[in-house]
Image 1 (spheres, protein in one colour):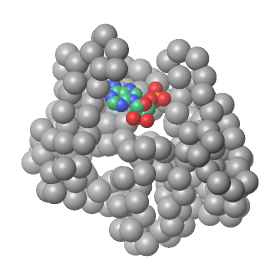
Image 2 (cartoon, helix red, strand yellow; image 1 turned 180 degrees about the horizontal axis):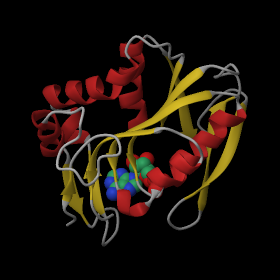
Image 3 (spheres, protein in one colour; image 1 turned 90 degrees about the vertical axis):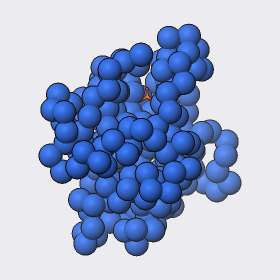
Image 4 (cartoon, protein in one colour; image 1 turned 60 degrees about the horizontal axis):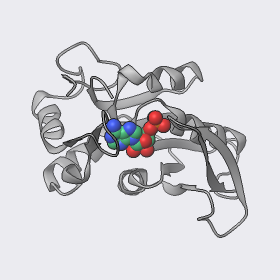
Length: 200
Ligand code: AMP
């Protein structure tokens, strides 16, 4: 199993993030369950259902993700199916923003825009309603975890295509060894993460 890396935002080597206290980091890390070899051998699955089921950890997680944007205008939170819906809904409520679902193909009922994105093996497609974003709207993208960044990159492409002003992409967990954060930053997207785990 990978060594834990603590911290928020870009803090990958410091033991603690500059803007997140130790209790908070530990609360989050202790509430995330690791399932070895799921869904396939060699993968350490970072399961946030245990964090979601822990009232204190869930609240602190949402508070921490929201904190930099409190008092600023955010129009829409775009959540990636499916765990991004849970976090994104709570964040949207806190920021008095709308919520836009980014879904796997074939799930949305109205006119859609679609993008192909890369998975570890192969490609898939994700979709968003065509009228979900008005050009120029300030949008925060949310998912539970960033690994290779293929999923988030696809979502960024969809949002950009719709004319969104992407304020940031927020994740609870970063797997820095897989390079997703760097990939998004190279696209000019600000990335915010709360905790990191070494390895995949
Ligand atoms: P990626 O496109 O490689 O950045 O993968 C990110 C997406 O896959 C997110 O929606 C995550 O929920 C999921 N994911 C990838 N790796 C893991 C992991 N080790 N544990 C839990 N979820 C993961």
